[in-house]
Length: 103
Image (cartoon, rainbow, N blue to C red):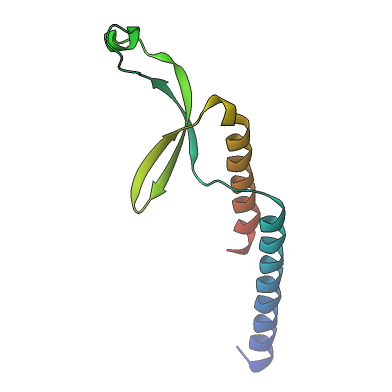
């Protein structure tokens, strides 16, 4: 590789880095993100005499599964927060896909 080719590659890399940084800034300014996977899990309250103690779980609830300090943590999401959490997880996924072009 001669000096001219190396110079062109450095210039192209610099432009791509600048473009990625500009996109990251734009994404971060306008949307909220929540990383993790959404799961539906059966719920068990554990109250004595409840049907769930006999193996019949309550209707499934939405759960956010994410890696925290190398350990998978699952957090149940309140029904009132379902729409917001789903939107934020989708935003994070879209941002990851957009930025994947620059990897």
